[in-house]
Image (cartoon, rainbow, N blue to C red; front, side):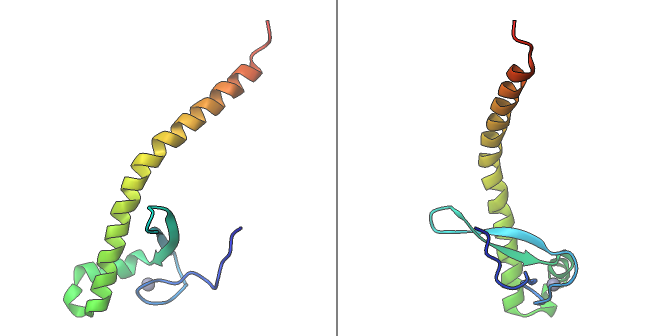
Length: 101
Ligand SMILES: [Zn+2]
């Protein structure tokens, strides 16, 4: 069941307008938890001039990067599994469309 509480908001500016990117947060058992949303512009603004933003904002920017990296590692594990499943599905599909001899 998909439960959405409120609209996703940017972790930096707290707005929900515009294009929001998302990274997954992880639970303690490596399960995928909630998603963290952010504007790429907001992240870039902080990256360019971190001294202009408070400690809190810089912390969040670092957190996004940490999650991005973890998302990538997670994908490296997950994608081959999915590829195998797709291959299997294609195989079965191919068998079924082949004329029976
Ligand atoms: Zn923002």
